[in-house]
Picture 1 (cartoon, rainbow, N blue to C red):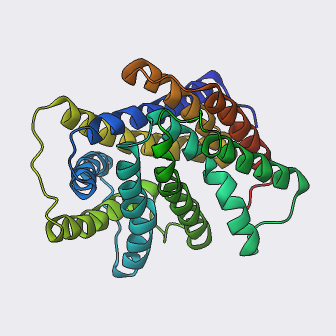
Picture 2 (picture 1 turned 135 degrees about the horizontal axis):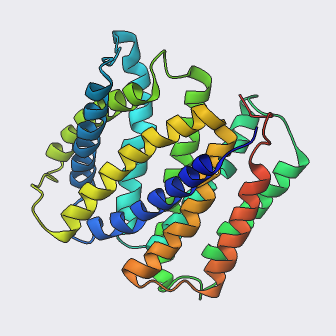
Length: 295
């Protein structure tokens, strides 16, 4: 399948947009607001954006009672747990590191799918998995890789997010969207996640009211951007195929590191640059070829 300049431009825009959400998340977390409070207002913003898109399409949501299980599972794996670990980790780790870590999602998904019989053994992809592990070790082991060695304690926590996203992708690949289109499904997931997070926020005393500060604006911007990018990604995947659309992940990692340098004045060590190159190389090998997409 050939892809024109419009599709390639959207691919770059998607990756750049998602890369921008990493430093914006770092800025949002700089207030010291607890994670559940940040996640709740992020979900409120997503619901408003996706709800507006749903109304503009005039097609309704199509929700039924049997969709509730799907909403709960995806809300936990795709929002509640990974966002909690993201905001907890990014308050202590450089934003660029978080952008590099997110590239491990396909590396983690491959052995999960292999164990569940959803994928087949492939020497090339196993080599990619080994490269990915090497890249993570290049971040974790050298004492000079991170600005502060104490940050290493939060690296395993940061890795929980990609693990959850990989499990979510596997679940969605097996169950589908339960007959919903992607925007309606994401809106339902966001509503359920908002209820779950709202309850945890109140139970743990983490509620707060956002104001007109720069960190609050960064949170709103990041949340709205994510909702719009998700809708665009779904359109691009439907038009060009999942393999082509998934290549936005490479741009996300590179742009996330670049925006962190511009907005947050981060300066990754040579070890981090090398780790990013190794991880992206591993991801390229693990990614299924066009026409050979896993179940």
